[in-house]
Every structure is written in structure tokens, then in C-alpha cells.
Image (cartoon, rainbow, N blue to C red; front, top):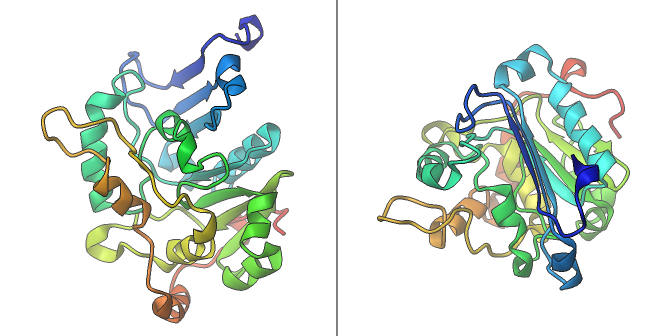
Length: 265
């Protein structure tokens, strides 16, 4: 399909696992890209790839998602990316269901939020060379690695018993813990396994985001404006609490050989 496209054609393919086109499915694969004229105009957005599998698959095959994520990052020479829990919406009824996502992420800090294409077009926020957030898996390019102090600093800030690092060619992928965390707000909205990488990579996170959702139609909740900013900073802590979170990490599950790819740095 890609070979039949011209340079200025729209690039946007979505594959889902539902029976009907409007179904929301845990099986999801989506690519979107800039047209040539947009790139020539100097748009600072990025092309995106988004994919997901059911959580049961991750439980049955503890390294499958990491391998897929690393392989995609390497093949695409990715600038950055993240992976973990997400609340999948209908690919063709995304906007109508954003309010549901807004409610869910207010209850579970470990959920990703926002459509990749909307965030990717926020060129003036610096999304091309800044990450949106951290996740169970977080990919950062070589320039970003250097910007946060290099691999030696990351090894110090993110101990290998809990954090694996994989080389994907254009940068590294950081795995935080043996499996993704949902971070239920009523139990623990700031697990150390996400707080520590958020703190270590804060310098390369976008400083501000206009919105993660489209605008509200009738006052329903959306992640735009202040709610989007609160989501962006949900794992932030005061610098003086950093030692307490390092101590808290000791109580969180460690990586195992069964949950880690064999080529960790």
C-alpha cells in the first residue's frame, strides 16, 4: 500500500482486532506521517507508529512486547517513544470517546493519554526532540541520552535490578520493572518505578503541552489546558523527596531473566 502512494498523499493506516470498523480493540496498529509539502514547509511534527496487544498476551509472553517495541524502534530509527498500559479508543470515533479516557487516566496514573497524531503535530512544543512522558518502556535517542548525562548517569539513577537498558541503534530503550504498572490513584499514583525515570529524564520532557485531546463540546472532561498539564507532570516530585523514592524502589518488584531481553546493556 505504501509503494502506491505519492509524496504528498496522506499516510494513515489503522488495523484493529474488532469485528466492526468502529470497535475499540486491544489489538491495534497505526501509522501516520507528514506529507512532503508539510515537511518542506518546516513543520516540526513527527511521524508516528502506535501498536498494542492485550495484557493477557504480555502475561503469557513476558518479553514479547519489549521485543516488538525494540524492533520497531530500531527499524524506524525512532527519535523517541513510550509504551505501557493504555485505554484504547475506537479508531474512527476517537474524539467522541476522549472524555472516557480523561476520566480513566484520572483514576490510573499508569495509563497513557492522548492521540499520537494530535501530540505529534504540536511542533512548537518541541515534540520532535522532547519526550511526552515515561512509561514501562521509554525510548530516547542518542542526543537525549547525552542531554541527561549519558548512559553512565542513567545507570546510576536507574539501578539495573529494576531498570533494563537496550540499544536500538539510534538510542536506548529503558524498561522500568518486570511489567507495566497501572498506578491506581487510590493505592499509589506515584510508584517509584515511574517516578525515578521521570525525574532522570525530566530535562528532555516537553515543558508544556497545549492539549492531549480535542476541545470539549458540552463541558465533558477532556485533557486540554490545565488537565493536560496536570497529566504531563503527574509523576513529578520535589527534589528533596528523591531519596525517599529511591528507598521506596527497594520494595518494588525487580527484573528477572524471564522478563528481560537477553541483550540488555
